[in-house]
Length: 133
Figure (cartoon, rainbow, N blue to C red):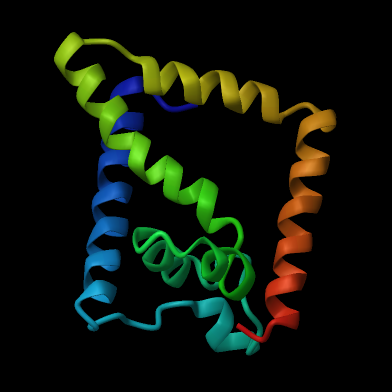
């Protein structure tokens, strides 16, 4: 398990990289970086997420769910909430995001949660492959 300091550093780096990639796509400079798709020719579980994010930013929920990747909705919500939690934790010297992560990790270790979540992700992945993303 990460220390809270390493956790926050990792979250900030990953968020910045993700935001940079999203901005590149908004500007039309998007890069095809999916190694899985490049090697196998199949959509990866996250395939269509960037296009789903762009659709959601235009409030086009239909495209985000039906055409691109339905999991882009929870990921988009998380992307909106992370900076709020980071700012709150920084201003008030709290560890709410880290504590949430630790509790969520503990919950997701239980089969009653990780099995349905895994099935949901695999089902969405199969649907993305069938949609030929």
